[in-house]
Length: 182
Image (cartoon, rainbow, N blue to C red; front, side):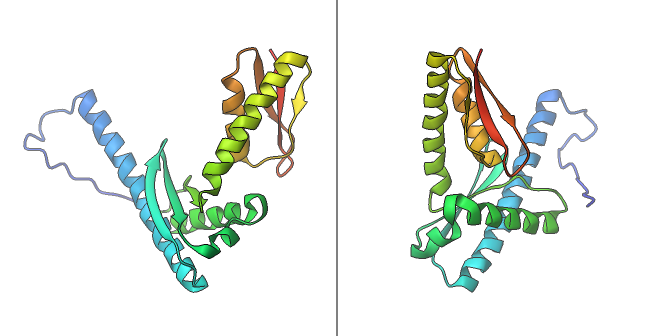
């Protein structure tokens, strides 16, 4: 994919200073993430129409990635599935739809019916309590296999507790977090 960018500043002969270049890069990145969200939103809206499901689609940009949320419909839990398995698959399909249109691999995050937000809270508590248990007992703890999304939350929660650290071990789909006393 090639892109042509034209400058529209009144004094194009003057070199950009670092601050202007950084702002331009940030706004270009955010514009690309907004575009990803728009493409994903259109894809998901077509899917909801095909399934005859109701839902409101919300688009946002957080932490350098497009975030798409679907809320409000009665049937949306079916799009989450057991332990988020359907949601993970739907997220991957949505990323592929974005990639097909943009030519760039997407890192967008999809949430349906607030499942990821609730799961994030549960996993943060699990990570914190596991870290505190390891700190108290001195014995390492291995958690059950988790998705990359889930492991990241656990690692962040463990990192917030002094005296312990965490690592991931194993191969997908059986990759798990192990918490150690430092």
